[in-house]
Image (cartoon, rainbow, N blue to C red; front, top):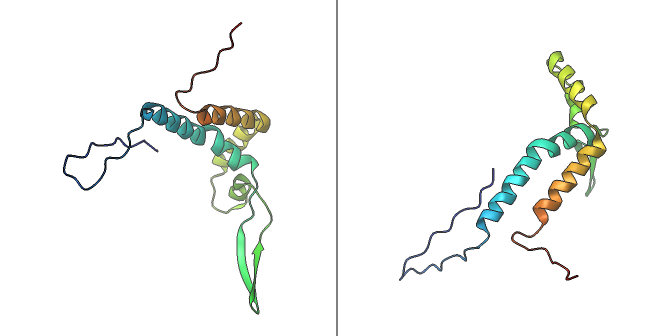
Length: 130
């Protein structure tokens, strides 16, 4: 988990300049917590169940050119189901979880959390005089 490091004042006579201390360190830590929660909750579910990936299989060399060969696109969950030695009970639980998920709702929640994280910290909203 990311945590914004606290800066220490550098003593007088030191050859190293003190790093600029941001007044928004608590806000940055809050943003880091939001990002960590996003990765643990929605992002992992979205990536593992709904984002297909092409795995690199091999590289063929033809003269001075290289040709990369990839397998068929599949989600990490599909690859897990196809692999040998996986507990069938765990696969059933993951399939039930996938059945309860809605990809568009998941994407909407991801975007909502990202907008909150990307908003500059400590910035007051402008109020229009009536």
